[in-house]
Length: 90
Image (cartoon, rainbow, N blue to C red; front, side, top):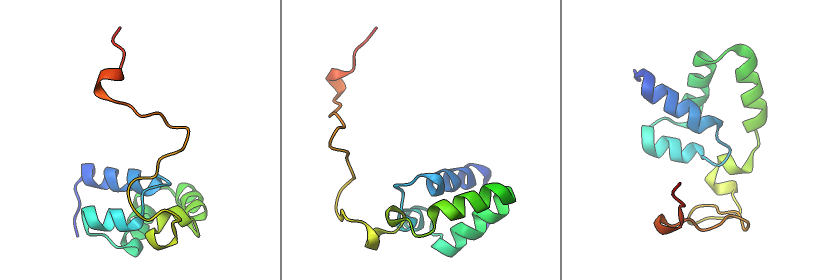
């Protein structure tokens, strides 16, 4: 599959995010986990790829089935609710 630069950058960005699952990447772009790994290996420096792989390997948040929360978005208990009207204007 040939991806344009913008799509490739977005996939790499999502792969780096701790809370974005491989399943979400597959749903949005059609790439399986192994294909994401191959893309990361191809597009990144060896040192960066090894650092990413070490961090991602075994991480529960990168796989939907291993997560402790199943539905909805993860929200930290300390995170405030932001509404359109609460944003202050300077």
